[in-house]
Length: 138
Image (cartoon, rainbow, N blue to C red; front, side):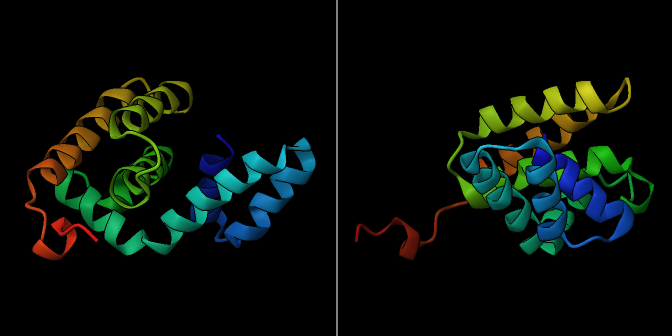
């Protein structure tokens, strides 16, 4: 939730994600492990923003990013980062968490939209062949 709020504020007001996250951590007196994980999500999603947004646009062609609800877009960004780049959480758990966030913070149709986009991205990721370099045992 803190990671989502941080990305959302960045998207709305263009405030530096690190500063927003630090402010949330101090205001809520969050446990350092929570802040560490939220920071990983926020900075990871922020660092891969162009790639993540390209995945969103590819999976939701009928919804230009500029017209997409900002809360939905940022829920998708966090989940896509977890699914495609972070891999510390099982993809299905990341999708379920994103759907729950969409139910809580989004519109009436947000959870179905988020689930559909993430399902498409997950299925595409499962179908991509693993390169020889990635498949070799090291």
